Length: 222
Image: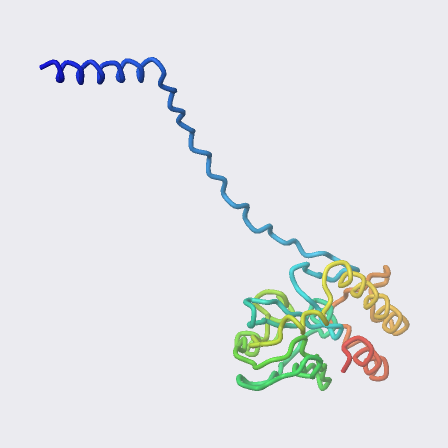
């Protein structure tokens, strides 16, 4: 009996001590969830009347490349080529499965007996063709950076290829230089706007053969 009384007394003392000295339990409020910011909508830069979207990379022959994944790259013509070539009647491009090299002529745009050759900005195997642009050749001119894309390429060495392309400030300076060279070639032939503007439709029809040959060699590298 005495032993039981001792045990009860001990437990009571421990309980009283705990109630006197216990520390308050701090409950941390749950931190508010911060959603990741959405990807900014890229507004195309306008250089001398030509669109130069910042999310693309450009070959100096006026084609562009966009990485869809580490190995998959979409390509097309840029706004400069689209505006200069006017009412294209047909477009020839390689078939699926063909291997293409960076800088190789792969796009042939036809207009009233003239052919405009454009080069590939990337190396790899063609895995997709935009049939809508083939069926409606002027789609590539109306929307060169959107629905008017031309080819999808599986490019195992895409990172190396992209180092050879232009982007950002360098791309804008390049486009400005291309517009200046266009003025130098086309203005004497009266192929540009009278107010000194650059981007007028269908320059191809307004240039004599000699000037057109010079333009395609200097600006399209073909």
